[in-house]
Length: 462
Image (cartoon, rainbow, N blue to C red):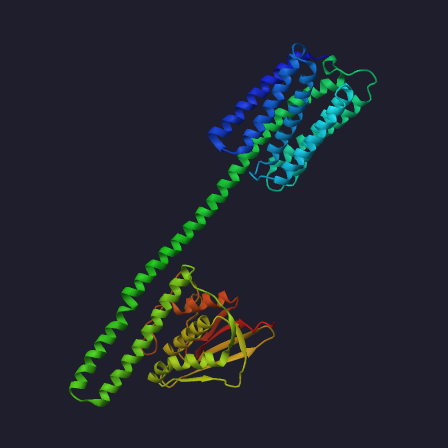
């Protein structure tokens, strides 16, 4: 097989000019990524080498050889570095590695510049080394991008071929001239054209694959943001609904009771006044609980709720909550009981734990009949503590029980004394227990009462 080297070199130069134009277009109109220009610059240096080699007879030989050798090594380094920079990362260690390797190869060339065989072997090996390093880096991204593996394969095969070519040339006994032609040089030209075209196409396809992955990631983020926006919108709507309905009712009750209190005071009915004052106090405390729930729920939904767990004694927390809800329970003659023999610490956020207990006990008071009872107890296990709030109230229907801790829809039921609620309390309990990596659930039988259970971690050992 005999090839027309000048014609093929001319074709290779035209092909390189097309690739330079293609990558310049990609940079200015599509990706705006610096490594595209680096790759185009490396191909441009290869084209300059071809051009200078074609007119070498009209130029000073020594300067032509030195300049050509310098930009040849530089072109290998630039194209290889551009290929491994497809993800946009500036690999500083690789830059220093390429600079040192390039300098060593060029210094070696200066020492043997009068020996054409040694000169050719060093140039060829430099190409193999740079493209071999590029192949190695691309191989490490094979699981992320399929075209990375394609480029890795092309560079690896070309690197091996160059080593074989360097070995074959080193075995030549007479002087070596590339333009004289040989089987290995014929294949070199053919494979070089293939590698440049395949690398350019593979590079463009790799960039396209990266773009597609980026688009998918952005779409996922957009969908996630959209869902969060929808949740915030539902939060806002529910918040307005509670403010306009569930808060309006207790305030109307307080206003009505204060009117009656004023009337009974004017008529000096002390017993009636005390009764009305007690009712006002109970209603105000219930309204305060609702306001606290609104504030906590809003903070939780918007990610503003702080979480600072510490070592806490369970008994004083329970007794403090009992004291807060004493008036509500007394209004229905409900006894609040806690097993004082349980002396244990939990690792929890104090405000969140109080909120959980207050909501669960308030819920039990709401659905327990007059003269009923509510028991709070705890069972210590190896790495957690289970807390039970049990009552002998009206119980929960099965279809409602399955929805108690779901955020999609809150269901409210009138209490045994027609108490109303927002439906937020149990949702807040669920979110706060989840924050502690605990679990919350309910066991209930209609007409016989309910047991709400949740667990928390024990005090962490130091």
